[in-house]
Image (tube, rainbow, N blue to C red; front, side, top):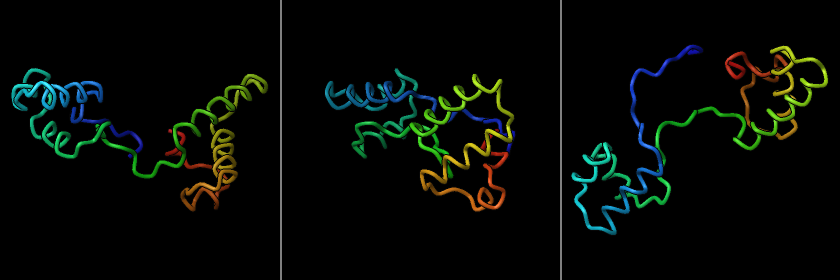
Length: 126
């Protein structure tokens, strides 16, 4: 699925909007159906967020096999920008090798093919 294009707009409400809706229902004692219509949030989703009592509800889908955390990705991106400035740019193959080296240095869980090829996969780079 290298070229997956999302076809639906599920989970399009922002976390801030959902927190505001939860506060309207809990603190202002407004009906869930009224708040969901006013803010265009599905009623069942709003009910689930209120029922679980999550302070920061998870909205949308997360990647199932994410290798790097957001902080690690930012560090890697910053390093790649610095090295690209010094060495007149990096090829995609060099970037994938750097990603594999960084993942092995941090001792992260990654696909076995990364070790076999000594570089990150094409899907990771895409």
